[in-house]
Amino acid sequence: MENEYTNTQHSHLPIEEDEIDLLDLLLTIIKNKRLILATTAVFFCIALIASFTITPVYQAKATVFLSRSDQVIIDKKPEGVYSTSTITPEIITTLFSSTSVINKTKTSLPESERASFVSLQADMDNKTKVITLTAAASAPDTAAATANHAIDIAQAELHSAIETRNLETAKLEDTLAFEIEEAKKSLSEKEVDFARYIQKVTPSKDKETSQLLYSHLELEKPQSATALFDLPDGGLEYLRYLREIQILEDQYLLLQQRKMALAELRRPVSIMALEKATPPSSFIKPKRTLMVVLATMLGLFTGVFAAFIMEFVRNAANDPKRAEKLAAIRKSLSLKK
Image (tube, rainbow, N blue to C red; front, side):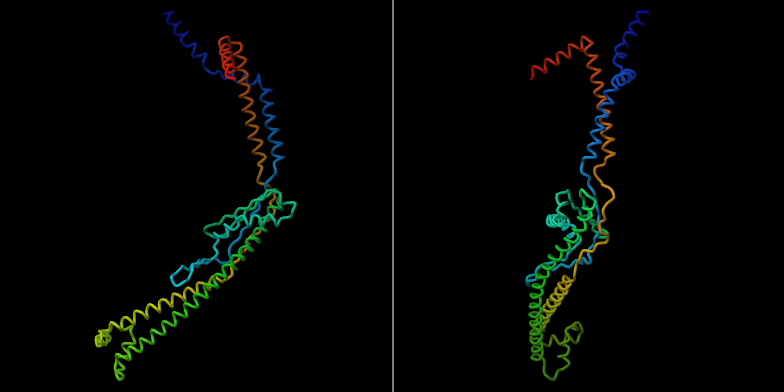
């Protein structure tokens, strides 16, 4: 029985030796508190100095919208009318982020501020179509000036694009005017031919039949159908004339609609500022408090880790078996070198 108890007691010894003793961990931390505090203090000082040496970044915002943004599209047709479109908020959003606007905005700044960090970003609200222009710079006044200058430069770029578009629109209008006159002329000639045909196929005294044939919108009436059957070819030539006139009328109306659409493109478009940018009161980068807190925590963990490594090395040096293992490791490392 005693042997059994002794064996049971000895069987638990290896497990107890492998268990982590929290008191030993606490003792290791206390023994190396100077190292831990010194490491934490070093990280704290580095982060604090870095937070004050990093160039701050200020952000200013302005909101703008288009005075008009109609969707007018002219498709390319065989008649010679080419496609065009209006200025949209999406185009203006892209314009603000273009290299041309950014470079011209930087050039418009005072020479002392041109070398500073400057960035532009435009975002559009899909519901309201309002564009938010965000400018970032190393000084609050520079950030506000960048946003406001970008609006003026984008407006100038827009005017240039509109002038180019108006020149193209004028060419399209000339083409349309010519095509409208041609369609009108063709329609008039076809109507004259139609009138001569009716005079030819109806007796001069039969005014009632002539009137029925002229009022081609009433062909479904019985008397109109009778008048068609009385024609020499059963009304086939008459129907051909009607079909050609209808095609010319549709073409004429379509050209008139395109002309009205082109006139819409000439309406002025401008970028209106809802709220201009003002110098911000504080910077957005660097986040000094966050930097110092994270660096302090990293220094604390680094110090504790270093303390445990040093304690492990001391214990290994006092233990013959671990000392042999450490010597073997050093030897293998030296051989590799």
